[in-house]
Length: 122
Image 1: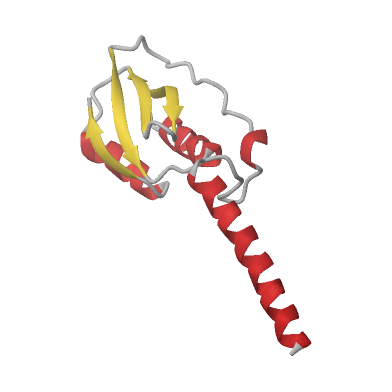
Image 2: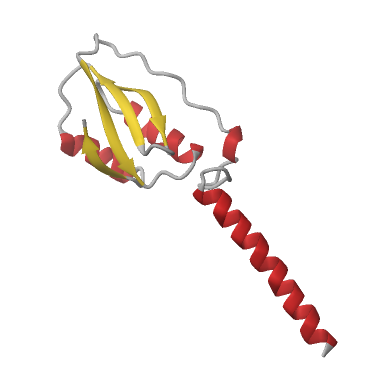
C-alpha cells in the first residue's frame, strides 16, 4: 500500500514538471531546439553587396523560440541578395531586405529546409 502511494506521488511530480515545461515551451520561454533559451546570441546583421531594392514580410509557421529565430535567420542570410532585418517567433514573421528579385519558391525551399513553413509574403 505504501509503495503504491510513493509511486503515485512520483508520477504526479513528473507530470507537473512535464506540464510546466510544455507550457513554458509553447510560450517561447523555454530552451528547445538544442539551445539555451534566452541566452542565445542573435546572428550578426548581414550587409547586402548591392543596394536593397525592397523589403518583404514573410509569415512563417513553426517557430517556437529564439533558437528557431536564429536558425531561420542564418538560413535566410545564406541566400544571395537577401538580408534579414527582423524576425519574431511570437509574431510568426520575418522581415527581409533584398537586392534582387527572389522567387517565392526559393524562399519556400530555404524556409522548409530549416524546418518551418512559409505561409504568406507581404
